[in-house]
Length: 447
Image 1 (cartoon, rainbow, N blue to C red):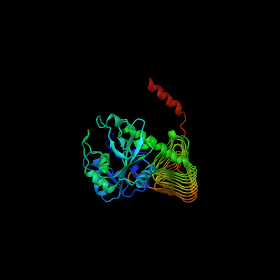
Image 2 (cartoon, rainbow, N blue to C red):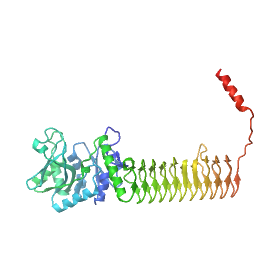
Image 3 (cartoon, rainbow, N blue to C red):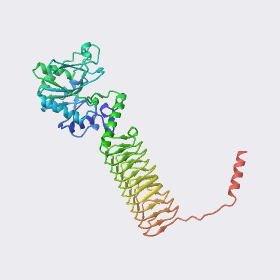
């Protein structure tokens, strides 16, 4: 990957790569989960809390990796082995594999797929009766014969084992191959030699071959993951106007009848309610948007937009911004750590930070809550049915009581009583002839 970030932590549609197969396995019924990691590689940030990590002492192949997990294997009955860098394997595919293993009575069941061009994938060699004899690696010249390279059925790298036979076979693994590695598929002939049967379960899901070894692979996997996420939501009743320009992370929740316009990016654990419209060209991170709300061409981070509320265009809702039912944060409005009450409106060109705005209040254009005094953030409280005039500056901490008004250009430093009007008056002076004198000055400077 040419990255300081461990491969397993690279995100795929908002979720760490390694977390994808874990989630699929859990959905398919897996219980105890162990993640085999390289020495001195911390991937805990991308794993669910209840996943155990097992360290592989040296990078000696897939067989060495599974052998490092022998203590877990010895305490199990059935062992499912997945590749952390094949993130798009589905719960349905895993469930089908587990069911095939249970019905076959085999000591091992491997997932396979037929490809037109098997390339460097390991080839599945079957006996005359159809059982799997072994898997022949094809990564390096000399690993496989020309006859074996002609086989189209390949090993997808996913297995189910009976734990006891697997543990015994791992003990006898050899690294006598071109790469000097212990290959997990080499346990299959060992199982057969011990009198066990090995079965294969053929799938047609090409995602099981979509491994990630570089950034090109990562981009291809993300594109397919995004396509699947969008398809799932659209089949569940969500309107996505232009899937090609829409990005939705794996953990985003979209209710039926939500409408997602072109150019939208929904990230993290965002949730969009029924009948809400997002976009076009909006980005929403870890936020909740209520039923019937509208977000137009805006940027939202860790905030909450209530039912039937309106946001944008060109609004910026920062962490802990809360818009109640029917509230509005309009054009070029920034809201941070504030609650905008039910039906209250901040229509345009305003900054509301660390504030409470009561129901049905209206903040005129150019309203600023001056919340920072150079040392600490202070709060502004605006009551219900308040009318804040244009270009009002509210110097926190300050309170404007219910039903009060402020005049245009007011600088409010003291609390405003209920129903009162706060004004800041500066006497206007008109300087006659100013423009003529200014023009003369400029002309003189240019000589």
